[in-house]
Image (cartoon, rainbow, N blue to C red):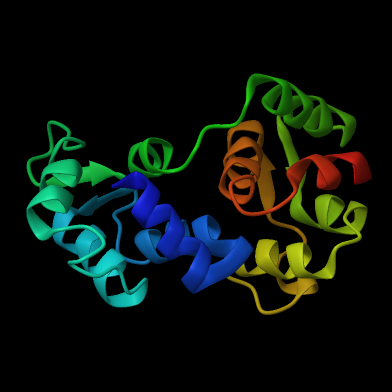
Length: 170
């Protein structure tokens, strides 16, 4: 089932697929990062275009329901994303952490502009700007990014983009 969703994400949204999915899920979440099962399924079916043939309704419903928390009928978006997408290999995750430290965080944060300036790939820069709700780099360049957010960004990019090459740029 996860393979079918991954394949649909790759076909429909390309290398920005998991970034787009996270963004769409957060569009209808509360301030704690929770959303409803109905919203998750709607994003997968309506926005992504996942068909019943690819993942039957009962299977998808059961998968999402397994991720419920104590908040009845809600799930944490970060848990859903971690469960769905392939995890970063340990070697790559260590390199992501090194890259964050190399960007010299202040009080545990870097600004998005510092990351964007370090990246040469204009498509990846566009994806990151979009992930933070911007339309151009100056609009989001001052956005603070914590280490956890940095890891999530690279985790979302890794299944469909060459993050090891990106990390070499940092």
